[in-house]
Image (cartoon, rainbow, N blue to C red; front, side, top):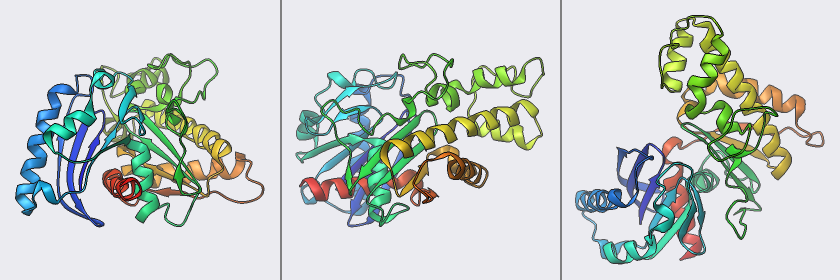
Length: 310
């Protein structure tokens, strides 16, 4: 099977067999550009990976694409994006797959695929009701109920966890809402949050127009007070979001993934304390777990999706 994980800053292509990733290659991309020019690169990358492992295209069962936006798995098309590959809703990806690979095509949201992967053989294994939160350039969310991804006619249910409002008088989000978790505690909003937290202080990142969590953590390690305050703000937002998703879906476990979780030891314990104190869960505790497969979780989810649909 061929698996593609397309995020706002990367595309990962892999050849997968059973529960083994036979070959994998990740490329940096600009989600702000169009998807159509990237499609030949994906084909070329997949062709090279198949050649490397000595597998013929005809021996593959399907192509599964995880996309960083709202999709219709039933219709196999992208419904909406948020400043990431904005031409995608106008593309016939099913036809593209048929022409280039001559294989069945399956499409799903990338975070939902990652949750499927963690349910299959990762941190959510054995938990039929689970939620996943991914923290990175944006904030992804997904929900699994009774072992199945939550579905709705228009594709929103269980998909846009990062766009739940958590701040009453918050920032304008790129989705058009006010005070979304993504607008308050993701890479896209980080410089603005930092400058607000810095106040009149000349923090190490004060002159940087753009930076991510890697730079924020580096500044924290250098005892930068605005960076520490910004991280505390993000922790609070992530905690509020986690409680909101627990109340919405009643999971047995919440799995955290994404590039920010490289500092999981500093992130999960305080969020767990907040959840234990504030989530209404009828006396039970909802554990928070680090994704077992990291950035590869969506690839394992592709296996689960293909086995269920084909």
